[in-house]
Image (tube, rainbow, N blue to C red; front, side, top):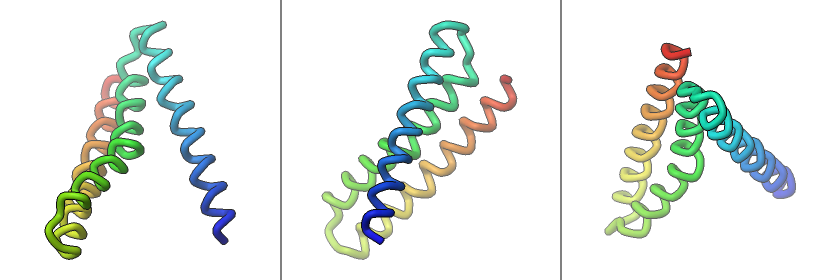
Length: 92
């Protein structure tokens, strides 16, 4: 099972990086704002969320506070992701 976790994590990272790169390239080449918004959304729910979770966990005073802070990060990044995708659809 551990191998599957590694494979899926790696595949997700590769696809996420490709999506971010493609979004930035399309923005630079065509000034495609929706492509840039999608890239930003993936950055937020990928490495952005991971970094924020680690940051809040390292500063929490208890396990309960850490779990609560991680839930706030999860909900906030999910909301940001959805807002950016909605904006991309509206502007497309």
